[in-house]
Length: 119
Image 1 (cartoon, rainbow, N blue to C red):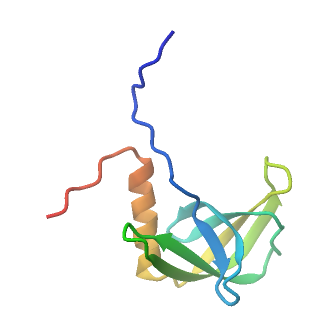
Image 2: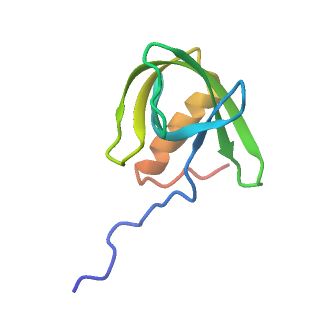
């Protein structure tokens, strides 16, 4: 039986939660990201065509959080493979630079490439 791992396993220590930036209440989890959009996984369907003020709280190694607020228009929503969950695609408007850094960091992390050494 094969027991040795050929590729290092990369596991997320937690899911990235998405909040309503007006009420600061959680509305779901980040499914995926791109430079100009994101997919939200939630327990309630999102209204297609509506604009949402979304907040990402990115945990830092020192225990603090970086907050990234974005405005997105829901382009589509359908039921997820997981019962009672929904996937919704958002087009983002005027994203801050911090959002671009997050997209880049997640792309690097999931490409299984080592992080560059800090100088």
